[in-house]
Each structure stands twice: as structure tokens, then as C-alpha cells.
Amino acid sequence: MNTLATPHNLAPGVLEGKPELLPTRDGFGKGLVEAAEANKNIVALCADLAESTRIHWFKEKFPDRYVEIGVAEQNLATVAAGMAAAGKIPFIASYAAFSPGRNYEQIRTTIALNNHPVKIVGSHAGVSVGPDGATHQMLEDIALMRALPRMTVLSPCDSTEARKATLAAAAYRGPVYIRLAREKTAIVTATDAPFEIGKASLVLEARDPEIGIIATGPLLYQALRAAVERQDDVAISVLNLSTIKPLDDRAILDLASRVKGIVTVEEHQIAGGMGSAVAECLAAHHPLPIEFVGMHDRFGESGEPDELIARFKLDAKGIGEAIDRLLKRT
Amino acid sequence: MASITEKQVQMIEEKAADIRETIIEMLVAAGSGHTAGPLGMADIFAAFYFHILKHDPKNPTWDERDRLILSNGHITPVRYAAMAHAGYFPLEEAMTLRKFGSRLQGHPEREKLPGVETTSGPLGSGLSQAAGMAYALRMDGKTNHVYALLSDGEQDAGNTWEGAMFAGKNRLHNLTAVIDRNNIQINGMTEDIMPLEPLREKYEAFSWHVLEVDGHNIEAFCDAVEEAKAIFEKPTVVIAHTIPGKGIKEIEFDYLWHGKPPKKDEAERFLKELRTLRGKIKSEHE
Ligand SMILES: Cc1ncc(C[n+]2csc(CCOP(=O)(O)OP(=O)(O)O)c2C)c(N)n1
Ligand SMILES: [Mg+2]
Image (cartoon, rainbow over all chains, first blue to last red; front, side, top):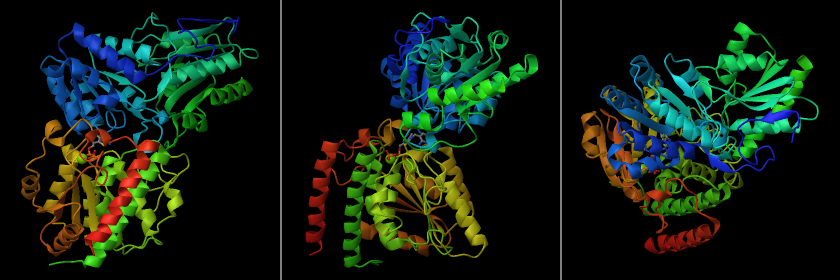
């Protein structure tokens, strides 16, 4: 392990490359049941994807607070807006391609403009959806949701964090979008790692970093792998940006002030995604070279999740190449 | 009024058996995908590709072709299998389903595979697209027929009814919709999740001509599609009552088979069962 970099709140086995695996959607499913036990105003609505969004755990436990919508995501968002207007805290779950993909305008007007505390849960984000192909691999949801006034955007890095994000979203006053993935991915953060909406966390801190990696979602693990693999030739700090909006400017600028350049990592289009948010912040306050790891203006396609992550250069190797490009520029 | 001879029916039934076998083989090779819907629609796809459609497998962009729009893209293995047997591409290519680099994406993509007509998977948008095609073809005085294949689950979606209203208003007689009425969706039975009945009356209220048939009776289905062509003042919807998983007893009627593929050992059993079905077709027509 890197003697020059200090890990913060990481789960066992992560830096050794032997993490436990769980899908982020599982963390959501657990968190929702916990939140619902504590607050009886929480209701859950689903558009015919109960099991794959893991909202079925809530359905089994609280059948009277579960609402079946059918394959109708526009109705999903608008019924939830109505229920929120009548005092409930609705969680609505589908695949991200359909919610917020299909029902964007309903979310915009009836949830965000109305300022209702509807929690939009978009599962199966990213190319790691795998064989289902491009139609189901949502890559524009961060852009859609972070452009919306009043929307909070959470993109947990692992199942542990997804559970905490769900609990935090339940307690939060406004509308929230939670982005989840289908596949089992590394448990990166420790069970007792703090989580707060709007706070990024430095998970790997180099004493004298040359480069900062800012990652969101399960690719955080790949970012850590890349940092560990390169530890002998370049000092790298890694920031987990699990709240994309509101952006933790302070944490980003603090990292930027110590490094020569930044690599952003996300399973999303480069246009409008987390890297864009970071670039907006840096361009305004502390211009620095940035390399963007993500999808470069193209759709995904069918394949095995690991295969796709590698093909689209979103894995540790691809991140390593971005580090090289950045070093050439700095 | 029979629009089809007994010999043709037997040929289509045999093609449907081929298609079912290919579906099982494709899904096992892929290791993921949907089983119930594709098996349930094998008879109807065989009828389309081997009798109803005006098409040219060697020239999938032929201007004179009829358009077959698959709205419920998750059952695409049945379309791929039918296309392969019809000669659009070699049967071996069918086994690349859902693999990296394949033209046979998990959900069909127009830009990858000629003949697919439109990209689908996200439910509820097929009827409107088909209506748009029918509308534009009629504007140009063309006689190509447009067929929209829909699932019952996607009758939940508002977009389906927006398309239905548009087609009704515009009396799109060159549009025929077929609904795979198999009574299942992901969370359970359609009538438990979001009741659709009375479905016939709903479409009638939207100014459609409605026919109901057994979706596994090839003669009845072909007759219905023929009748639809004779209705000039309205679009027609054929509500095809099908059995999800049809042909394999273990799968039939079980919504849990909506979205999973057979395992290798299961597949061997299923393929055996399908082969005995083939013997039955022969004896029935003797
Ligand atoms: C807009 C949209 N929402 C959700 C889904 C996920 N999904 C795939 S199939 C399906 C419903 C299944 O019902 P049906 O279409 O009748 O399929 P069957 O099981 O009969 O093949 C759902 C909800 C989707 N594909 N598109
Ligand atoms: Mg169905």
C-alpha cells in the first residue's frame, strides 16, 4: 500500500483489490425500509420494476404504503407529486432511462417547480447495465437532473453509501434524485463513514499530490485502483463526489489548490455530467487542466458489464491513460 | 373466408417451431434476456415473416415493403429468430445476441440491424411511431401497410393512447396494431397491476375496429389481419390472446419467466419438448 497516501474511511480489502461486492440498488432497498420504519409518511411508488429496483423489500414490509403504477413513468412522477402535495414523502423507482428519462417534464413542473419532496430513484444507470444495450443504459440523467433548479442529485459510490443517501434523502426537505446501478460493485466506503448531502469526501489523501481524481458512483473503485497502481510514479489524491448537486465547491477547490490537474471519472456522458459540474466550478474559481473520463458523445451497447467498462475506457486502465494525458499537459 | 390454405398453415406452424428452437438457443448463448414473451409471439412472427408481410430479406430497405414496428422491444429474440429463418442474416449470427459488437442488441436498434425499422425497448412509443409512418405513407399516396406490434403491459403507458387517439382521428386504415394479450407484465398479472379490461371497448371508444383472436391459431390470425385490410374507415387492432412461454409447459403462463433466460440443462429439456411439438404439427395436418 502507498505509504505516501492516507486512506480515509475505506472498507476492508479495497486498496488490496479484494473488496466485498453488492449492487448500489441493494443499499437503496435497505435504506428505504429503514427510513420508512422511522417515518410513516414515506410511501413508495413503482412502475412495474419492483424487484429490479429493490423497492419490493418496502412492498413486502409496508404493502399498504406501496402504490402500483404499471408501466407509466409519467403517471409515476405526477401521482407522486400529488401525494407529496397531500403530505406524503414519495419515493418513486424505475430505471433511470425511464425515470427521469421519460418523465423529465413532469419532474420539472410538478415536482421541482412545485418544490415537492419526491425522491426520484433511477436504477440501472450507466453502461454497466450490460447486455440490455443502449436503450437501457442511461447516460444523460445527471445532466437532466443537475440542470433542474431545486433538485438535489446524489450518486452513491457503493451499496453502503446508497443506504445512507436514501436515509438522508428521506430526511431532506426538497426533491432528490438518487442514481443507482444494476451490477454488483465494490463496497468502497466503511460502514461508519460519515455521509452528508452536499459533502464530498477525500478517500485517498496523498501528502503532496500532483493529481486529483474526482469520481462519482461505483467507478470510484476504479479510480482508487488507478491511484494505487500509479503510486510509485505519481502522487494522487482521490475525492468521492457522491453529491453532484449542490456541489461541494470547497472540497473541490481545496483539492485543486494542491494539484497540477484533475481527472474526473463518471459513468455518464461527458456533456453535462459530473465532470462538467467540476469544470464549471474550476473555470470560475481556479482554472486547471482537466481530463474527463466518461462517455464521449456516444451511446453504449450490449456486452458484459466489465467488458463495456473496459471498452469505453472507464476502468483503472482507462483512468491511467487519462492520468498520462494530464501529466503531459501539466 | 379463409385467406390461407392448410398447406400454408402447416408451413407457418413449422416455421414457428424453428423460431421457438432458435429463441431457446439464442437465449442460452446470451445468458440473459426474455423468454416468455418471445415464445408466446412465435406463431404470430412466423405468420408475418412467412405469409403476411410484403418484404424482401435481401433488401431490407426496399421502398415497397410493409413496415413491422415492434414496440415491446424486449421480445426482440423472436423477431431476430424470424428474420434469420427468413434469410435476413445467417442463423449463426443469431447466436451473437446481446454480445459486444453484435448487430443483435439486447433491445433492437435501427442503426445496427437493417430491417428492424425502429429502436425500441422503452415501452409505449411504438404505436405513435407506426401511426406517424402510416400517416406519412398515406400523404404520399403509398399503399405499404404498417403493422404495430404491442404488448399488453405497455397499454399502461399514456403514449400508447396518445397514438391510438391520433390514429383514430386520422382514420389510418393502413395501420394495423396487434396486441400480445398474454396477461403478464413484470410485477405480476396485468389485471392485478393495472387492469386493462375492457380492452376491446377502450379501443372501440378511440375509433378503432377491434378483432380478437387466439394468437396461436395461425389461420384465425391471418384471417383477422386480412379483414383489417378490408376496413377502410378505421385503423384495426387485433387483440391476440397468447400464452406467455407457449410451447414449453414449464414456462407457460408464468410471469416469472418474463425476463430470464433458460439455463443450459433447462434448455436441453425445452428443446426436446419443442421437437415433439414438431411431430404433432405433422400429424395434425395429415
Ligand atoms: C418505459 C418503460 N418502462 C419500463 C420498462 C421495463 N419493462 C420491460 S418489459 C416490462 C413490462 C412487461 O409487460 P409486457 O410488455 O406485457 O411484457 P411480457 O412479460 O408480456 O413480455 C417493463 C415494465 C420498459 N422497458 N420501458
Ligand atoms: Mg404481457
